[in-house]
Image (cartoon, rainbow, N blue to C red; front, side, top):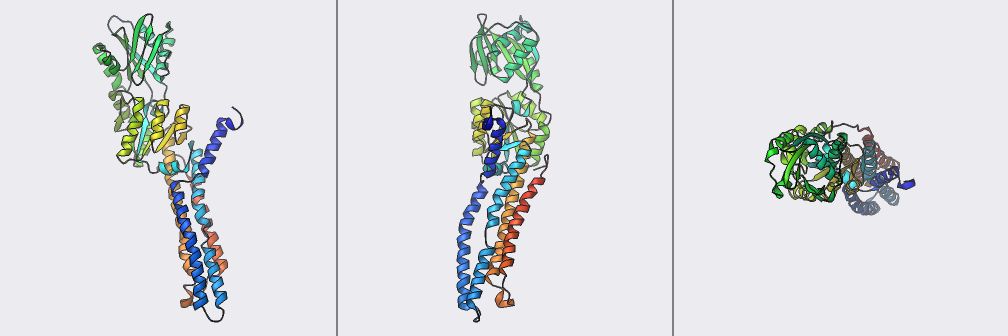
Length: 435
């Protein structure tokens, strides 16, 4: 692609759009300002009338004009208008610096509120590069024949595990006939015709659904699952032929990232289509207690919805096509940048690196940004709240002092300076901080 269609141009546009967007807290400020400005106008008019009617007899008009103008000057809501967009602009830019592209301000605000983050397993907590570790043959079968049949069928599949099986067969220089009548069975496996034989490949449940006895390979399957490997059964003409064990290495920094999330008070859950034993083994290595295993692709979004119904604010991290509905359903969806385009388009935040550390970094930026916005709003209001009564002349009857309009202008400018300076503190955030 060229011009504004390049990946870089789209990234730049995404960041600009997010920086210009307004989160929920910003819309609340707009509502406050809609009440605050008319209120200040009314106070200014009342101040003018009070000084005209009750001011010193010498020059009531001068006192009335000066006090009314001073009220308007010190109450100018410039700082109020800067409080949110300054922090959002810097926060989104900081997130981009950390390798996370945020689509809108609402997502930036929501991330800091998440109390549950659901992680897809393959390609998210793992490398997404599965490999065959063992091929176990049933009685009267040869290991090479089992691998050959599986690879013939998987050549027509787009599943990540399929690539591992085909790669293992090719590395063994096995001849692979063409499979016919290929049919993918979503969430379970696939079937096809190879040299006139009906080959079935997939989970133990798939074998059970077709009344295929797998007892010869139960020990091999149990051993694979205990090692956090995925067992894939191969059957020919309704008879089990063998078992292929596939491992997908856990990313080196996944455990550390999960610990950082947990230390921030966020519950981490693992979501996978793998069997319960394999899922539990992976979760055990990662220190995750909540596991949703054997979840079909179409059911992932329902798992997210059930957590939301229980009152949780849920984030979802995924990379595959079948993660897209769950990413869209979650309060905040995180797509691994190395994943599919569908997942990236469905998510609110795209992590340019294939690391879960990016999720924690966004949580850090989100919480710091929302905290910064609240500080800015306090700084903007405190000048107005304290300054308006003094500008109106409440001290005059007691100490004979009126606020000079120039000092009021300086105070108004100071509130803007305070907001801008405080927002710029976000630039000092560092990657790897604890949320």
